[in-house]
Image (spheres, one colour):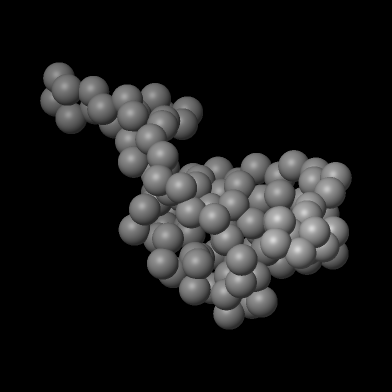
Amino acid sequence: MKMVRAIIRPERVDAVAGALDANGFTALTRIDVFGRGKQKGLQVGTVVYDSLPKTMLIIVVEDEQLARAVEVIEETARTGNIGDGKIFITPVEEAYTIRTGERGL
């Protein structure tokens, strides 16, 4: 299993979540976050905004579903502008459903 963390523009969240759902990735976690990337924020005149609003979506997928999940996120979140976001992948050793104690996704 893999955990996919996608940090994207807030205005793209509904489109990305809808595309993930349409492709069978129904469970996700959404967290509103602030941060900056390589561009170190945004400068407007003499004012620097170094913490910009973003949204982090987290999903856990089986290894064989990873490429499709990343493709869906990239295609749907991309605007072609600086600040479109980043995707991070990490391994998940185990997952348990709290209510049932069931192991796995």
